[in-house]
Length: 286
Image (cartoon, rainbow, N blue to C red; front, side, top):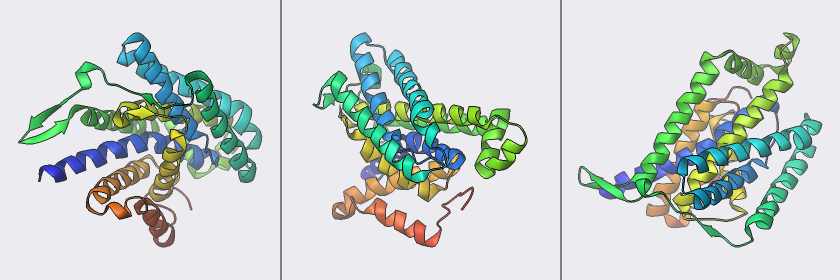
């Protein structure tokens, strides 16, 4: 029973990390129709910036804020100078964002070197505690809490604010939003910065979770995020959350009970949804 509970907690916490990357990616793709493979690079930059700031200052909060700020800054550069010129052209988007991903990875090596870097936790997040006879790791519960807070904040933004209404309307019908005289470019930029900040936050939270960070880490999680976006449905925060939890739990339980299948499980789920429900769990559009 202890093993099952810990696998469940591990799966949920991993799912929350994937959600931070995938939800922004889903909104970007759903609203802007942009295939942004450079999103993984923002994830990696968030990890390196946060770890560097924490090692320099000892302040976890400052490191967290700095990671998000760096992600949003790089997101602004990417959206303004790389992605905006190729709106509507998926082939060029693919080439440009893959190039952006490689550039971001190489820049990490320039600033921090090519070798993996260790990541540590502040004292207040280290260790574990026992609840009902089950040993629970503090940091994994902290990641789950952050994921829940971000999820609720996103829902409130999308459902209770004028900006959120415009974002949801843009996901469903961009042409209609433009016809109403709304500045779609400004909405695009806001969504891109929001997604970039969440990606960087996810990278920073992952750093001590995995123990080490490396320049190419973004590509691995970008692939997971794209799988989640397809399973959850384009433009849907709820779909991204559900799909992230499914992927996280499937990975945790498969790695423990059927390790030979652990690498293939995500692709199998992707194929299943592409065949059975190609619009995703909560797809906003086909």
